[in-house]
Image (cartoon, rainbow, N blue to C red):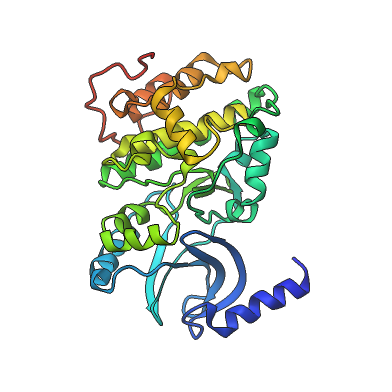
Length: 342
């Protein structure tokens, strides 16, 4: 960042773009997304550096409930969840502060080279992905672009990274689902890996709490913002059907597929993605890369099943991959085969 750009950003902050200037000292703008902007700030009360995210304002009649439910999420403690701190309202602008994570995005940490199309998609959100800023309704590249380049085969080292990061992400999801929270917007830019190799999930629960506010959801629709990101959304979520924890597992399947192959499972317009997810078999990892263990390929296929009832439970995933059951799985009562084929 050049000095001119930094002066411009700090001037913007000083002119009121960042609320509660008496408490928070602006450091830099980290990124912008569909749900708001994120800044690195110093909390003058505690002296710590935190991330501050501005968000669209819910219906004023729902503010008390919104604040109460945020507090419940902020009370959650898990090593793989980013810590939420404070929720505030200033001049009709909602914001909250959270742990500032210095690290890499999920895809970068997995050590995979992305294809040309995925690189173009990432280019438009590179700053956001680096800091975990949620950007809603990202539009994937066209089908033609998506097939332009195939990623190189995964190395043994990168596959080991994928397994380790996947184990941590499953632990975070199992914990959230045990609390009755569905993330609803799981994607690489909402999963960071810090310098110690610790996975940190961001924006958990926020979309699900906002989605319950019908008037707020309608306001989002009028501005073209959706609670979720098309490239990683489950088919039932794209259809507007009730969403369960199994939708998060579909999103996880999209992330795993991209980490293993370097490309998204489906590309094109939102309508094309929905059509493919409703009527086409889950894409196969082995079609694009060699030397990926069969158990990882099978897990990816199962996660991308169009039928949420046929997607594996977290416990079934752990068993298939030889991972420990570190957190109880609230969906473990499923009786159908978790790795049924089409």
